[in-house]
Length: 164
Image 1 (cartoon, rainbow, N blue to C red):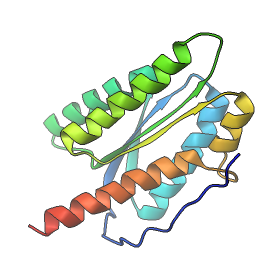
Image 2 (cartoon, one colour):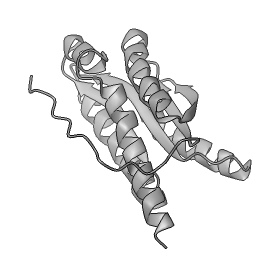
Image 3 (cartoon, rainbow, N blue to C red):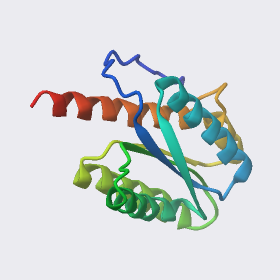
Image 4 (cartoon, rainbow, N blue to C red):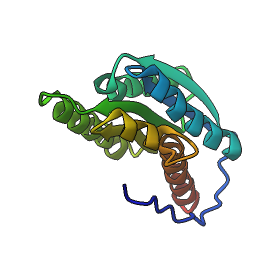
């Protein structure tokens, strides 16, 4: 496995008080707990509150995010960022490719089409051992990485919006 390379981001744009959404797929409960732990820790450090929506699997994550963004905006309490968390482990069929590619594509579409800060923490692995190595905060911490990505994009959006 390649070593994780995390360059520290220097943007310190204030995002305290922001509101994030975490949508998690609970297909692998124990692995999901580890991903969630990493994401929540990063949000806490940044002073960002969060809500959690749970869906059955990774394919449902993008639709749940879209529904939640619309509902929150209509309710006058919009989200500032979102984090997608889930795990897809390769099996014996092409289902792995469909789930991993389509969930990723739909998340990218959401982020780009809406100009919305979104961190993709859906890990796609060959084995459960690889999933654990990516999920644990003491190892690769992909839940934390997804939260950091969403927060980095939120900082960029706030900085660019302020510049107008």
